[in-house]
Length: 289
Image 1 (cartoon, helix red, strand yellow):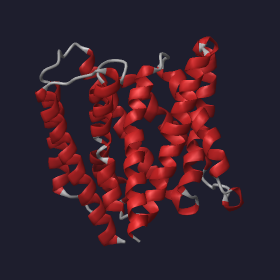
Image 2 (spheres, rainbow, N blue to C red; image 1 turned 120 degrees about the vertical axis):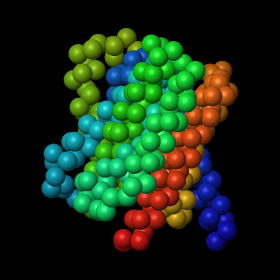
Image 3 (cartoon, one colour; image 1 turned 120 degrees about the horizontal axis):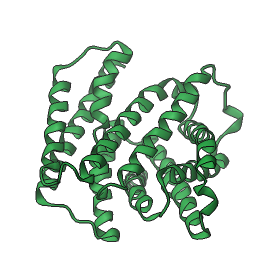
Image 4 (cartoon, rainbow, N blue to C red; image 1 turned 45 degrees about the vertical axis):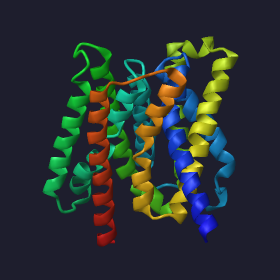
């Protein structure tokens, strides 16, 4: 029993570390966000395909919803990797870290659930944290754009999370990930072919894209799904909130990116608020189920 829990915790932290490292390797790959996301979704879908239990796959009744989720995944990653082109990895990661707040604010409207005043206060605290982060930055500089794109990434991921509920009732986590990555890849294909950058990518970059899609997407997703089956959802969600911490640490080690004390203080406010939002959200969900 203890061995199973240890393996599950190890898998969970490794998955979250890989999630955070995706931004670091994404910044290292010298291609635009469009080509990068296309490559990531392509190799993620190819890597996930052998793991899908095709015998249990059911035809979806909501084709528009399936396509919409693939589009949201594309927007989520496009905006996230675009944020990395403006400033240090920390700013994009902290913008994305707002997604639990969006979930807490949007879920009552979408699913007709009771609203809670604390959600508004948590949103205010996240804004305060982001303002503290940006107080050292030039408002005309890339930091503001990076946070803005990160917030768009968080919003689109929150919508994707909420919209995935229906799919998750009839499909496994691996099947959902495969479908979403495949749809996102197909939607981006005409755009990336029209842009033309795809034709100029060298072998080294293709290898890095394959690494990003297979290890930092397919493998991390599989490890995360494994831990979710064996650990409490609240523990998994709170641990997932460490993604920006891992990301900033890896950016410091491999990219030499440093942030000021004020930026770290703002990041701490955001992380504590979103962790509380995740815990409160899970508690409400468990009580109502």
